[in-house]
Length: 414
Image (tube, rainbow, N blue to C red):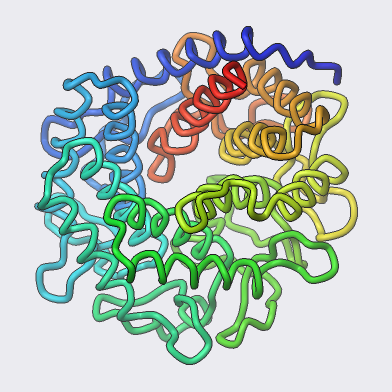
C-alpha cells in the first residue's frame, strides 16, 4: 500500500480525531450512579450495567486525567475526579490493600488482585495525581506500588499473573505463570510512578522490570517478545489465562496453540521502552537497536503491505497466523512505527505509520463517533463492531492520538 507520509496533514487529521474521541467520552463516559460507562453498541448507545471491571474503570480514569493534562481544560479534571472517587469508594480493599478485579451493585464481585488490574490502577492514579496535583492520589499510587510487591517472586524475579485477595498466586495453571503482557504494563506504570515521584525505590524497581523484559522475555533467536513463562522464565506454550489473557475476545477465548509473538505488543514494547529509558537514562534512544529490530520484524511478518494495518499474531519467525486486525494492536502500531521512525530516521517506518492510519480511518474508526471498532478481517470487514466493552475505555485509542500528536509536533520542530 502506498501511503504518503505528510506530517502536516497527518497531524491535522489526528488532532481532529483526538477531538472526536474526546467528544465521545465526554458525552457518554459518566455513569451518574458512579464510575464510568464502558459498554457501547455499534451506534454508540450506552449499554447499562452495574458490573464494572477495574481495567475499564481505571483506563477511563487515565483517559480523562490525560486529556486534562493535555488540554488544560478543568472540566476533564472534574470527570477524572468522578472516576477517582468511585475507584476509592468501590474497588479499594481496605483490609489487604490493592484493588478488586470487579464490582457490582452489591460490592466486590471478584476480590482477586489480578496483576493486570493492579498495573492499570497504578497507571491511572499516576495520571490523576499528575493532572490534579492531589497529594492523596500520589500517596495512593505509592501504596498500590507497595502492595503489588507482596506478590513479587523474590527468587526468580517478576510478578505472578493471577493472585488472590491476600496476594498469593491462585492455585491454578494461570496463577503459576508470568507473562510479557503483565511485565510490559508494569514497566508502563512504574515509568509513570518514577516520573511522578522521582523516588529511588520506584526508579530501581522500574530498572528491574526493564531488565527482566530485555533479558528474559525477548526471544533470543527472533529478537521479539514472547508470551508466557514458568516461575524460572522457561517459555511456555500460551494458554488462555482466566479473566485476563485473550479472555476478553468476544468470539471465544482460544489460545493460538503455538509459541507466538504479538506484533502489537512488540511495537508497544518499543515505544514504552523509550519512555522508560528517558526516565532512567535521559535518553529515548538507549535501546534503538532493539526498537529497530522489532519494527523491522513487524514490517516483514505482521504488516499488511497491500492494505495497511498490522495483524494480530504469528510465530517468532514466519508469516502471520492470525491476520485479523484488532483495534489495540493497530492503535499501538501507530505510536510504535512513529517512535521507530523518530529514533532511526528510516522512512519505511513513517510510511507504515501512514498506511496503518489509512486502514484505521477506513475500517476501524467509526466515521461519525471517532471511537474504534474492536476488530476486522484483513480486508476490513467488521467482525466486532462494538465501540466499547469491559476492556477498552479509550486507553489505547486516546493514548495513540495523544502520543502521535506529541511526536508529529516534535517532528515539525526538528
